[in-house]
Length: 500
Image 1 (cartoon, rainbow, N blue to C red):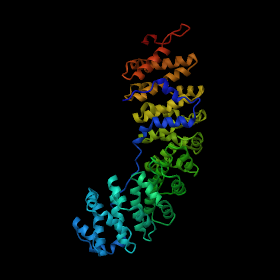
Image 2: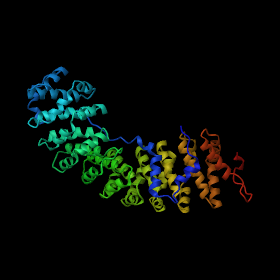
Image 3: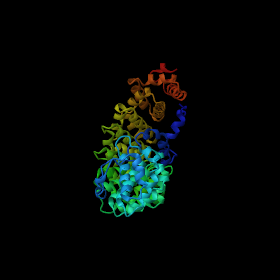
Image 4: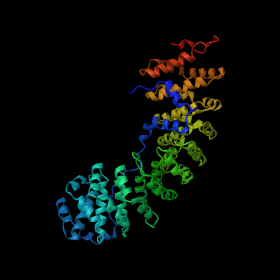
């Protein structure tokens, strides 16, 4: 593991004075990126269609269905008889729709994808278009290599053309296929966008379509918002945002979930992108959705608001004005540790702001649940809570720091000095050192000493002088030497014998 920065250097990074708020938040995001990756992909990148067809177009011919081998399928799709082409394509689709071990590789190696793409263009045969689109959907749901095989066969443009099909089932299956292709990554996402798919998808969403169809459109739009290396182009984002804002008012849980995920992708990283989203006026609705009992809605709405408060001071204030701090206290106490972690992460970014944001954390009584997390939560949640304390402490006024100290954070922080995570141990030592530096009045220092003695904190810090990490050992030594030795006036602080 690489050596940590010296505690003094880390401490400088936490300080509010002389630093732009957004710069401090960006440092916080970079330092904590790994803590968020585990929950990044809760939304499915790709979806395979394994349902039984209820398509009226298909039912007219399905009575002729027979058992097809792969050789029969190859022969059938290359036939000049449209009925045989249809039956062979349907047979291929059914193989690809098997719940377990669909033969994607065999179908690709048989050279069927170019024929399936060709069938997409046969407007007089919508039943054949439907089966071909379904088969391609399931191939594109596979590995990146399998998705690429679909794209390289030229499927994107005819699939986008099918968005204008008068047959809803054909149109919906094309949407699904495009969603799988877009979910593979930014390259194919941008290919779909550059072929003018977004206006067509938006147009479809505004028509009177079945709920299942609207769900697929919403999910596909969310995949067109996904990925940030690079981000989707600004033009496409601005096209999608009004529709996403409307979908955020929907009553369907799946639509709400995928809309929130789309907004979470659009609010990752850049303040300008965050501004584009908050300008749509979606914050009050996002905060409302943070109270949902459905995790599929709560998780991405909380993630989106958490992303927004990584932005500028004004963007964070907009989230606070929308009521996020009223809800955050409940979420810090949520039974699911994944929600506690996201809520603590959001709180840490508010705490990274100016003093008036820190004051609002106090006003909404968020310190008690924070202390509870430090004491009792899973370690991954405790790490977020430690970051929150670090950001709060180093940006706080003297009176705010006093409130933080008296909230009871010191005891659980000291208990976490035995944690196996060296970064967290180093941050806690930074916080303790900072507490001492700011505790100018002697009686505040004496309270710190007494509390540290009660929970065995002095012994914990002393033992860290022998830590294998040189920065941790040096930081522990500095605390012992600076704060547990003789004062200039000759008075001795408690436990002077612990000095090494």
